[in-house]
Length: 159
Image (cartoon, rainbow, N blue to C red):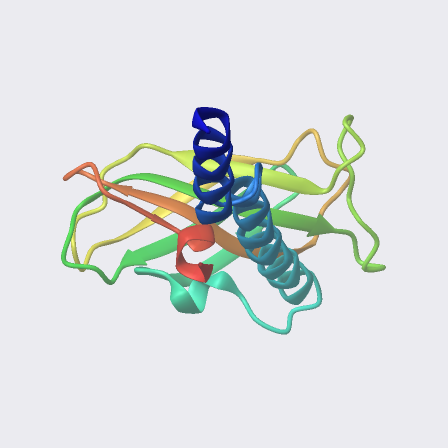
């Protein structure tokens, strides 16, 4: 009789719980959805349909591409001071072909840790010497860090 009660208890407990791996499957579905949206944004950026800049607390004032560097002037639209900025810049030649570097990618990740106060504009320059004669670009804002230790990240925005 005791064995039957234990067996019934085990069955009832197991029926009330989630299947093994349920939470992981749900997380994978959520991650897949976010990764899918991130891939869409990359595609939109790559085809110039949209840019993550429009969702960002900064705005691009100007972009100048030279043989050896790219300079981007950025304005802080937020009420917070920025102390970290990460941008992705896809570089192309005059034929709209990827201007690859030695790693066979045309993506330059630009990082700056200079302060940018609210309402302030400042030029940021990154070296393009490793890339094959870039003359055109497609740009997105990847991440921004503020002095209050908060972050803006386009991936978080998409969730």
